[in-house]
Image (cartoon, rainbow, N blue to C red; front, side, top):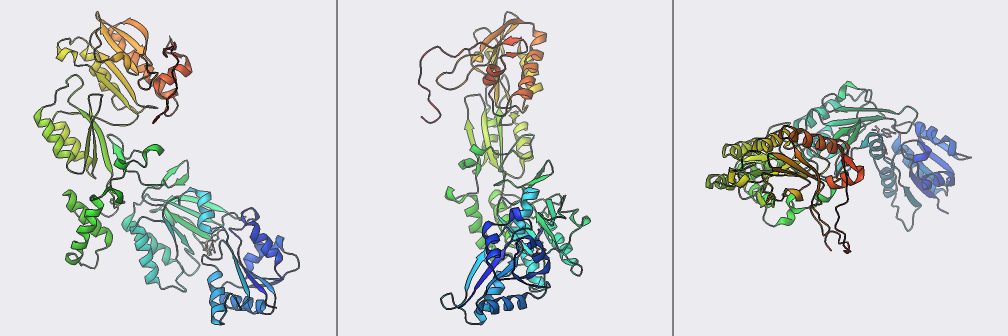
Length: 545
Ligand code: SAH
């Protein structure tokens, strides 16, 4: 009777994080073979099993002993920490079996029991640093030539993988981690978040969150896993978080604008995706093929080639700047332009400038709000904003921000209230809010630009201002704003509106439209909410129906 080999990964070290099958498999076995520290970790599970614990470097003899005992008819547990198939015993056991001509049909039965590997257990303690494409690299050069490990670090760094470094350092091996840091710094910012987890889920667990530049100033040892973030990984409340994708959009005054979940899969937010037919990336790939023959210097790598190709397409300099180029992708810069707050007339020169800055790759969308939205793939937004400003455009960010929608004041003839509109714009333009907020500002009681239908409406009439709050701007139950005040003095209007907006900014829930906020709180700055919903029976029609 042939026995059985159970190759078991028991997880990071605590019982709670060991699989049920790992526990029963250990209990089923006649003997346990493993590194002494590991046998100690599972001590409490053992009954009368024979223990064959050996030192660290005797992995081959451990595997041979296990196979021999199984061939004698025993059920043998070979234990590894984490997962037995990740720098563990599983491969070695199979190698020994294969050497002996083992087949599944004729040989001892083999069961590999999966476990939670260190990269997973350590990641869970750090926050959510892996999330996206990631790899593990062992820095141990006992069985792998250092030149190959170096190559792997280089490739992984270049391709923006999140990297878990196993076996980062031991008493004798201290240079490897320094070399790894040096290579990583060629591609990633010194501020890239790095997590060091020692003895995850064991008694001496120790967690450090640091960055690429400072990681070597902390204790790193045999029991540490080093998790290096990718170019999008960020820190929040001392947690290391990698988003599920790349931040592809940014707007005025913000470095990067996070895409909200519903925005992520939109076509325009993925300018590099392959599904768009002939696009930048495809062109880049074709260009790359041509460039390979020309740029054959030893230092050239695929990122250089891709960047060079991209820059040719976009007419920019091709030089790779170490530490500044994190992504071989170009983000989309988006903003709104209009000829002015009061002025609604575009000049031919402005139209030419628009065409120039948007180019073939960008997009222009005209909106019902007297603005044109621009979405331009670029790494150089300043160049664009400079040209637009020179052409006399007013530039505003997109997203959940304050936006003033003034009328044209009868082409400037009814000009008395214009300074107040301009003051509001100057004070609040671009202000981040829970949800987009449009303030309509009309210069006479005709209110022909429809101020009462905006979130907040301001109407100048007989030298004073009327104020409307909480229009529902879309939907089949859309309604005008509620008239809350008439005859506000000109020197008060900006303050009144600013105070209302600041209250909404502070107390509104994320994504809560202004009219919903007004309805929820019932009163804003002394103005009491009244339900303006049309009193008619109308079937609800959610988006798309
Ligand atoms: N089979 C194991 C890896 C063994 S290699 C697994 O899948 O996790 C040994 C390396 O694993 C250590 O140098 C360390 O980098 C990592 N490691 C294993 N257990 C760990 C733990 N509890 N906490 C942190 N790192 C651990």
